Image (cartoon, rainbow, N blue to C red):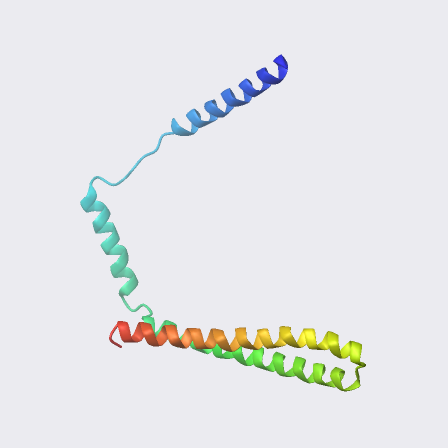
Length: 133
């Protein structure tokens, strides 16, 4: 028990020594005052707004990506639906029960896919109305 206690004390002392070493490192700050910090921030903001992308260009680019993903998702759902329909036609009643469970997953996928589009459209309309656009 004494060795275990000493091992724990040594670990704690080593941890304290490491923390003191980290705190004792030479940290230099180049900002002289609050005005310098705000000046650097203003310079950075002005560099970003000179010919940068606007919110509308971002939304337009994002809509294109979203339309591509929705098209891919719709194609996948159609292919899976056709495959499941073909399996349903030739299935026994036990297999049809299993396919019915998989059909629930397909229905959830459809709701998620088109629900995301609806949520995006709703959020875009709310934000454009609140920003006066």
